[in-house]
Image (tube, rainbow, N blue to C red):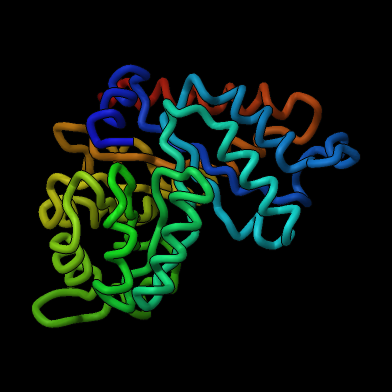
Length: 266
C-alpha cells in the first residue's frame, strides 16, 4: 500500500485506527476452542466486526509463533483474510545482519502478504535496508517506546540529545516518508511535539492507547500533521471487549467509538 492510498483510506473512513490482533489463545471465548482453528475464527469475527471503523490491522507475531506450526497457519490465514483496503502490519520487531534481514523481509513481504513490518534499529543501517528495498512496503522502526525499560537506553544522553532523538534523525536518512514510519508510544504524550519537529512528514504507529492508558486526544493534538500522519493502535481494549458469544459485536462497538472520536480530530 502506498502512502497516498493509506491517506485516502484515512480520509474516506475518517479514522486512523489500527486494530491490534494480539490474539492470546487463553483469552478467547471458550466456545471457540473446540473449532479446528480457534485463533483464526476469533480473528475472522473481529475483522468482520471492525473493518468499517479501522484502516489497519497489526498482528503481533509472538502470539502466533508461540503456537508453532498451527500459529503460523493461523497468522497466514488471518493476513490473507484482511482486505487489500486495510494496511497490514507484522509486529515482528526484526533486524539482523543484512542477509538475515533479507530473509525476514522475504518472509513477511513475499511469503506472507504484509504491507509493513516493525524493526529494531540497534544494529544500524545495513540491518534495516533490506526491508526498505521493497516497493510499496513499509518499515516501521522503533523510535520511542512506551515501556518502562525505554529509560534504560532510549532516554539516555547521546551526543547533543537523547538516544531516541539520534535514532530518529539518523534513520530518517535511510528511508523517506513514503516507506518509513516510526513506533512512538502513546503513554508519553509530552514527547510528541519534539518528535514531530524531528520527523515532520513521517507516519507514526502509536501503541499504548486504551488498556495502557494513553490519551487519544492528547496524541492527536500533539502529533497529527497535515496528512494526519498517525496510525493509533488499540488491541486488548477492542478485541477483548467481551468474553462471551457477543465478543465480536462488543469489539465492533469499541472500534466504532474510537473511530468516531478520531473523526472529531480530523
